[in-house]
Image (cartoon, rainbow, N blue to C red; front, side, top):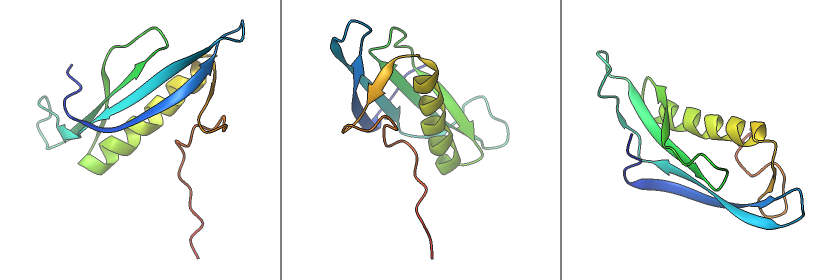
Length: 103
């Protein structure tokens, strides 16, 4: 699978067990119609570079927004499951969760 045009990218910092710091880059491609769908579903490709497996994967949704949101969620889960200490701007949450307070 091709990543295609990158719509968003984030660089985060990893810390190896020996204390060495390294960069991890997450990229999201532009959502696009799923070529295998017969009912108009969409796919959003994503890639994590710097943790060993740089393959492009995708998440799928009924429209482009759902595909993009599920792709961000999938990356969040993969980073959490990596067992690597990661942070962005000093935050271990990596800024990949959006839950605004609505009044």
